[in-house]
Amino acid sequence: MNPSVAAEPPDGWLAAELARPPFASGSTAAVTQWTAWRAPAGGGEALLLACVATPVPGWVEDMRPAVEARVKGLAGASADRLAGGDAAAHTRTFVGWTAGDVVTCFATCAAPKGTAHGARACDASVDAARFEGSAAPPSPGLALGALTWAVHHPATTVLWGGVFVFFLAVVAVLTRRRPRSRI
Amino acid sequence: MVSLPSKLFFRIGEVAGLVGVEPHVLRYWEREFRSIRPTKSAKGQRVYSRKDVENLLRVRDLLYRDGFTIAGAKKRLANGAAEAHPESAPDSSTASALALALTSDDEPSALLEDEEEELPSGPVSAGARVVDSRAKLAALRVEVEGFLEELEDRAEQGEPA
Image 1: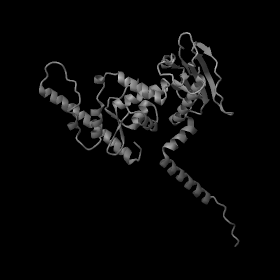
Image 2 (image 1 turned 60 degrees about the vertical axis):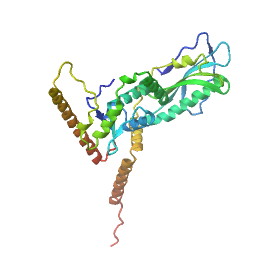
Image 3 (image 1 turned 30 degrees about the horizontal axis):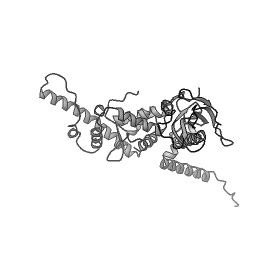
Image 4 (image 1 turned 90 degrees about the vertical axis):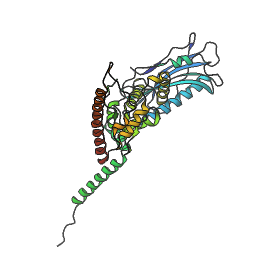
């Protein structure tokens, strides 16, 4: 089960179509949830629930700033597209995992800029949004774990790297081909 | 919820084990969340109070179980703190001061005057209370001395706090 965000739109709101975000060619990200509603009276108010899954080799907390920045950027851009221009939006973002993906979700209530916070009917839907179905973060594995450890222990890494290079140098000297004696 | 060992203060390695994250993640969360404020010993090593550990467990649940982002978890913690009754929250300032002092060379017994103490109901002689307090202080002193020895060992081995 993929993680998803659940929220109820305000009464009477209608399902709406909004083009999914265009990802760069070669991107491994995939949209796993994309559901929008609009206010029946018009006015540009809209509610969007969305999730994007991206394969990761494992999870280390160092990834979090980049992942959260991406979901915030996507939520902001989506709010602008919902409102048809600069939007005033109320957004909540979530981060979850499956066995091999990090899944970023958001719920955003958008209206054209200038709409007062609290005047949007879907603000309450965002406040009540629930994040469901996330598993524990996937283990980083040996390679990613070792890389992370090295980043956070630079002195020890340099020391052991130096010892390893010295060892290789000693082995190279001991096993070098000696010139044949001409005597 | 993880049941914490019956001790007042924790080293970063112990906290990392209890919370289930690497020590560098604890340092990262410390930068992000104002409610997590371990004291530093005279040698600059972090000393976490029980309140700090409980806050870290709450942060872990918000981030890993509930899917909050760092910003969302901050808001949730701030709202939670505002909703809580301030008089029911444990006073961490005394505990923090005690943690700082216990990792210096001061005598711990002099620092316990402000600590809450549960006294048995009914008439209790002053002598019995003194004996009881002395026993508690002795037990605390043993724990603190063991803790200081561990810290010194780690410092000598060059391990980061």
